[in-house]
Length: 287
Length: 182
Image (cartoon, rainbow over all chains, first blue to last red; front, side):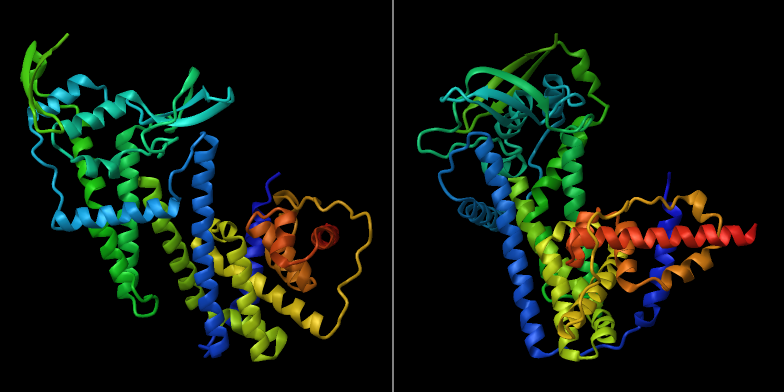
C-alpha cells in the first residue's frame, strides 16, 4: 500500500519544525572553521577524482587492460593535447568542407538509424580466461575513419568524438589487446533506440547546461563562487566546439532528405584524401 | 576521451555544488545546531560534521533533488547536535531491547485518511526528536533503515527501534482518534 500521504505529512512536519530557521541571520564563522571547511572541500574533490580514476581503471582491468601509463598521466596528456589543438585552431573549429556529395556518399554507406556505437564482447585472453570488453562497432569505427579520410576532422580531433575503446593496450608496439579464441558479442552498450545522434546530443546538452549553470551563478551576487565565469568559458572554448560541430554533422546525416540526384544515380565518382594527402578516386555503385 | 573529460569536469562540478550548498545553508545549519548546543564553537563543529558525513558518502546527497537537500541536512545537523550534546553531558542514549519488533508497521494512505492531517502533523511534532529524525530520513528521502542509521550515526538496532516506536505511536494515535470520531 502507498505511503505517499505519510511523506506529505512528514514534509509538513519538517516545514513547521524548521520554519524558525528559514531566515536565519548570517553567522560569521571562525577562522578555524573556515580553514577546516576549505580543506574538507579540497579533500572531497581529490577523493572523488581518485574514486573515478579507480572505477575507470577497474573497467580497464576487467577488460584485460594493461596500462602503459597512469590514468592521471593520460588525462593530463589529453588535456595538454586539447589545449594545444584549441590554441592552434584559434579557439574556433568549424566543420571543414563537407559537401552534399560527401554527405550522400556517407548516407549510402551507412544506415544511421540502426547504427550503434559500441558493443560488449566476450573473448578468451591469452590465459584462457573469459574477458569482457567494450568495442566500437566496426560500422561506427569505419564511419569515423571515413570522416577523417574525407578531411572533416583531423586524427587529433577525432580523439574527442571517438568512443573510448576498451581494452586499450598502450604497450609499445601494440595497439590493442589481442582477442583470442571465440569472440561473442554479448550486448550493445547504448540503450535501446539510442544511436550516435542521441548520445552526442546528450553530451552537448550536458555541456551547454553546465555553461548555463555557471554563467547564471556567476551573475548572482548571492550565489557566485569565485571562478564560475572562467569555468563556463573554459567549457565553452575547450570542451564544446568539436562535439557540437560533430552533432551538427550527425544531424545533417540523420535528416531524411537524401539528395535526389544521388538516389537516382547508379554510379558516383568521389575524390578522397587519405592521411598522407594522397588522392583516391572512388567509384560508388548504388546497388 | 569523452568519459575522461567528463570525469574531470564532474569532480569539479560536484565540489562547486557542495560548496555552493554550504555557502547558502551554513548559517541556517549553524542556528539549528546552536538551538540544541547553546555554544557557538560546538555548533560550528556540528555544521562541519554534517559536511564530513556528506563528503564520506556523497552519492546519497547528490541523489536527492536540489530542492530537498536543505530538509535532509536540517535533520542531519539536528541529530549531530543532539548527539554531541548528549555525549558532552554524558546522557546515556535510550537503552535498546534485544529482539527489535516489527519496524514495518504500515501507515498507508487508508489509515492516515482516518484522521485530519493537522492532527497527525501535531502528533508527530510531539514525538521524541530522534524518532522524528529517523522517520523523516526514512520517509522523506526513501533511505533504508541501514542508510538512515548511517546518516544519523546510530546503530541499526537503534534506528529500527526508533522507527518502530514512531510508527506504532502514530498508528495507535490514529486508531484512537478514529474510535473517538465513531
